[in-house]
Image (cartoon, rainbow, N blue to C red; front, side, top):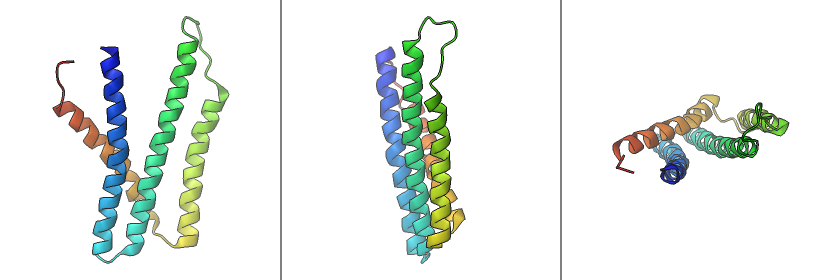
Length: 137
């Protein structure tokens, strides 16, 4: 059963990844068709940043799982300090990118924030998909 859960988690993670890009691109197409290219650009930037955040988060969690598995049986497992540093770096980098694009490219900040929400929409859609496609495993 553990193997089936790992495979499902991997499929779900892949689904969230491509749905994030899909939702961001779909929103950008709608914005472009409505004649607002700066909003379309912001939606694309936000969706890409959301996707990167998701990928980096996955890598951080994988590293944390490896570290805790390696210390199995230890009374107080130690999390490597660089895991905390990478988590802070991830948010700082995304904030810096959003700031730089907002200042130098004149893309509305709200459009980038809405684009970041593509990740939440993708996670929700993937979760609903998993609920409705549950089979005996």
